[in-house]
Length: 96
Image (cartoon, rainbow, N blue to C red; front, side):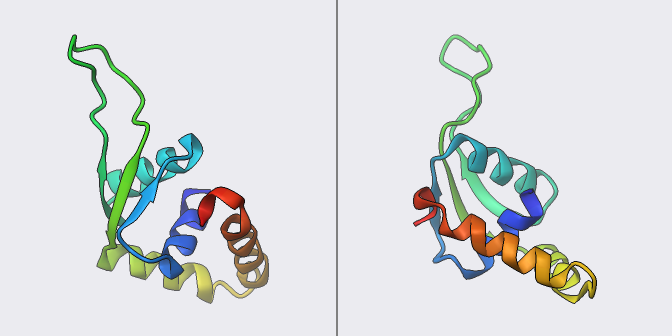
């Protein structure tokens, strides 16, 4: 699903604030793999305990991210299904 979220980000206005926990996790994965640049809230509290990031701001899609998007869109058997899934993700109320 992170790659489908990447497809959604392709058409989103950046920078984009992300607050849904599931989407923040996608952003974290996409950032860790170098497909996007994003700022995530600190992963630890003042006491040093790990906390899951609650928000993220996606600032841009990297060149590697654009390559991945193109690969997804060029895959002939998955193309229609991938695009429809990305559209469904984009229609979720919290994606606005």
